[in-house]
Image (cartoon, rainbow, N blue to C red; front, side, top):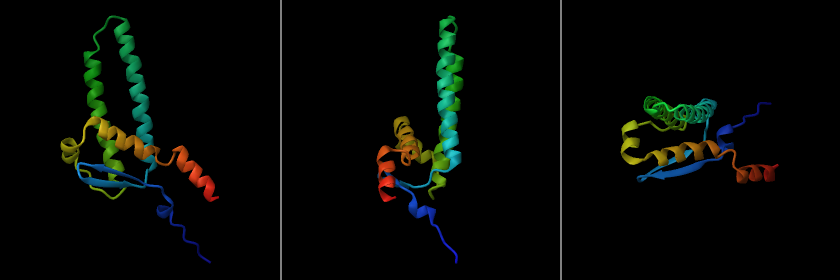
Amino acid sequence: MHNIINLDDAKTSVTFKISGKEFIIKRIVMAVRDQWVIFIGKTSQFQSDVMSVLETGGDADKLLADFAEWKASFIDKILGRLLTTNGYEYDADWWADNADYDDIMRFISESIQKDTSVDNKKKAAAKV
């Protein structure tokens, strides 16, 4: 006997509509989750570093510029991987022309949280 378990069908999904385009996100691979954890950690560390610099009377401009560059690049990497693992081609120019920073951050964070929301956990528990 051979059992086939289709994990794709078991996934919850979230649908986003941005500038007339629809994206259905089902799969959040570990690499995306890992990158998100790194992003949150570096953001927290950056805030701490800026406070330290400002408390000592230093100039945080270079620190801000370096972090802004890193942040843009890292968000681009996360968004690209999230889209491609869900069957979409990533077009950085399209996203730059059609979504603002808040749209992109919400897209990423809501996608990652889709499997961890309280409602989804309740639905999964009810199926058991």
